Image 1 (cartoon, rainbow, N blue to C red):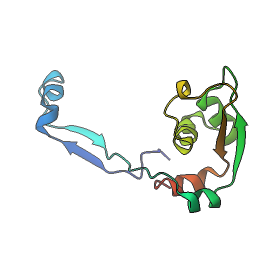
Image 2: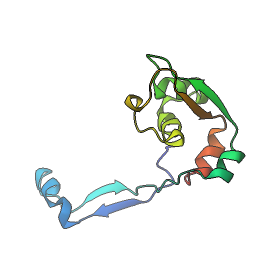
Image 3: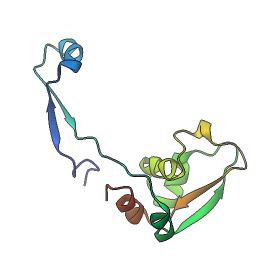
Image 4: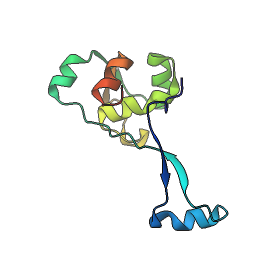
Length: 113
């Protein structure tokens, strides 16, 4: 099942994207997936989600951790979002990050599961 199967396909004919439509053979609209709204986990949510702690070392990547813990590197953003760290450049060696262990549960907490 596609990770986008839960989202509506929207026809965007907004004037804001007129330049894109013009570049794409004067399309009348562009189809795109609805943007999910993610929530920041609160204290009660964090208590509910079982995590493990990882000590960041030089060479670590969110996608390798996602592959290690979830078996799927495309969920790298879950670890980044949960920790409030947009990119690996925001993490320093020896920083502690939390890795939610139950992927299904954390996706529910973030509002997309």
